[in-house]
Length: 56
Image 1 (cartoon, rainbow, N blue to C red):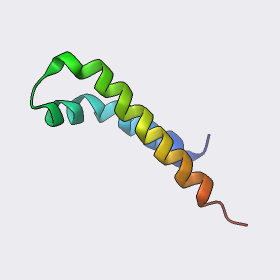
Image 2: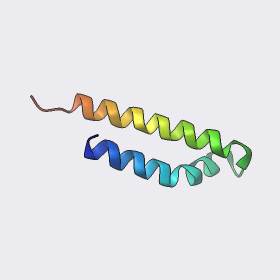
Image 3: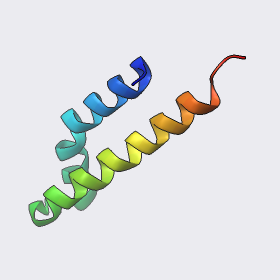
């Protein structure tokens, strides 16, 4: 794992509950699935950013 991927995943897992709470305006019923969705999305973004930014 690259440093960018690790940091991005850590920060997402740390703040995903608060972010999803703000998006759903306090609907905690979808908190778990929201956390999984945001974590997966950020992991994919971090992966593609690190994959595309490799220096030759």
